Length: 160
Image (cartoon, rainbow, N blue to C red; front, side, top):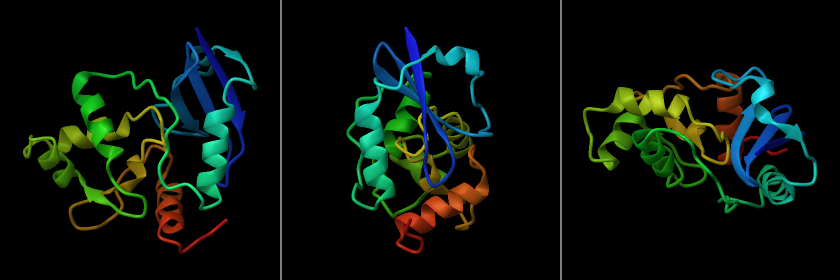
């Protein structure tokens, strides 16, 4: 059974979605690959206290690694990519190629990029920390402006 809530953030409203009480989605407004609202289930503003507290601590610069339980629904390859994203330290970046190497599939940087783009739990699973081989920002489901702001925030350039 799915439930959701909406919480404020410095990046606009965030929709948190849980399946049987476990966080399975975090979506930004106007996010690419955002599921339809009707798939989020009923609204329950009491279910997400732990996730909301961790997000508040993150945005306050007090939390570097999330520990909220997650349910990452995707293909086995996507889940491997998302697990690898969670290994990227706060304030650091990785290229798609480096992620592909870490997964033992060095020729799969494009597939890594596609899986990265389908990440259902933005910010907590830090797909914003992935950049192009030349160091440039590349696509981000939440928009390149948000990606740049998240990276700047984690590097200490923009505190909220």
